Amino acid sequence: MKTVLIVGASGLIGKHLTQKLLASNYYEKVSVIVRKPLNIIHPKLEQIIMDFDNLDASIIMAEDIFCCLGTTMKQAGSKDAFYKVDFTYPLNFAKAGLANGAKQFLFVSSMGADEKSMVYYSRVKGEIEKALSDLHYPTLLILRPSMLEGERENPRMGEKIGNAVMNFFAPLIPDKYKVIMGEKVAKAMLELAQRNIKNKNIFKSDSLQKF
Image (cartoon, rainbow, N blue to C red; front, side, top):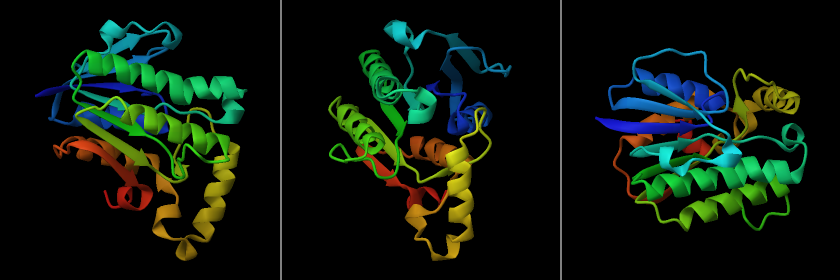
């Protein structure tokens, strides 16, 4: 039986992932790093309240680490704030976990991630993928979902409009660009973590749709 730690457990993918991990027999302990407590009580669940800007690296300890952190430019309010959530925090958690013996790091990135992109969002996603790769985890699994669908605590209007348009034209859109449910991505993360995959692997949205 293994231990797992989740960062970003309150988000669209993270909340589904947390429930699936608690229901799974694969992990005996599920720790979540959160800013405020989740409304969940479970014998396997450990909630660790932490200020992400003052990370206690000694607490980031589990065999597998799942990172579902992510925001938008609008929600973040500035490029610096966006960079902190989508680059600095994930990298800090990954470094701390590796130093404490973590074997797998599973990270939700985004379709179009490219460190040379002219689009700031995609460039930061590409930069964090590169930074995580440079840590040389025994297993690094990067998921690149397309536009996500599902109930968020803080709805994203642009995402809702985009989802409606893409769902309308779904028969004409290639699988790798189709809207994907947040729960589907969470399911893929859990199943991929159990496959004993080694080294760095990237999973694009069309492959995630098959889980």
